[in-house]
Length: 407
DNA sequence: TTCGCCTTGAGAGCCACAGAGAAAC
DNA sequence: CTGTTTCTCTGTGGCTCTCAAGGCG
Image (cartoon, rainbow, N blue to C red; front, side, top):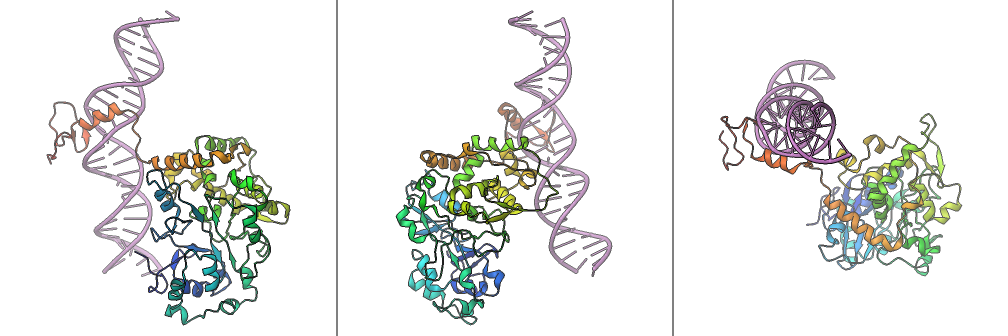
């Protein structure tokens, strides 16, 4: 059952705003996020069609449904028999896109009747009007068009060719939204959530898993949930981090020289030693060439933490223990260095690695681990008094072999 | 706003004893 | 060096107790 808009409570919610942690209908989305410059920076994406609570990460072509990562994995695992489904990565947008722009970008989701129905939301309409040709009227700023950054989608199981991508790369489309290279319009130290990696020039990098179509670092919203948003479809990165071989490489960091905590948070070049920056630089020749592109060190560290936590949505201390990484490390304070090129997964093993990671994640348990089954078996049949073991032959109030307890 | 009371949840500790591992022979 | 015996310590589950946090009047 579709969730209702958190704002108007009437229309079916279609958009998920991470910054507000809210599900909104289309009109309320525009309404809410046209309020001021800050709200316009909120990044939004489609709502998962299955759970209706999480931001969608992919669009399944076969099922014609937008799915969050959990639903995607659950619905496309080996057991479901839907592993071959083609999926598109669904990216997010910010700014105040018009209905036409949204429907153009997400035409696979937003059929005309749906959009029309959404725009009939009275609450939203009372505060705004929809004019496809005039975004700035709603946003109130002359440069809102620059804030309107909508990422396109790319086929996950069918990597785009250079020809397909070339029209998307670089300059403005002239249609009210741009597929941008790196954060040209962003303030210093901020990387656009919407930056589009110009991978058209190097298909091999895309295929071998080293290509990340998004580097999304938002200084206003660095929750763990943003991992998927930050890294788009780069699940492979997560599995690199936590697979048997991959995690080991992270422990090598202890041999690295300590980070000078007294240093001011500096803006570091994308070429710096960092999994995010380095990888994105690798995958983004354009960014690499642009030496003016900077990422605040602290943001990068946060992203690093997200990389660790990204192994599961329900990150907890248990995660830290399970993966062998201390919470202190996850705080991002100790120095970090990239694991090196050896962690890159070859293109041919990407699917296998992803499958392994998914299965591994499913198997993960935070329950008590029994080291000695024989002791457990013994404890299970041992008689107790108020939970305590008693000597054999003594009167007891709890017989584990009895169906009904004696107290 | 502060205080006291109550509820809730998390975590530590207790118990006996089989068995693993170390030490002694 | 090898095999046997003895000793020490660990781990096992259900229950109780303690403590902290939060809600409420």
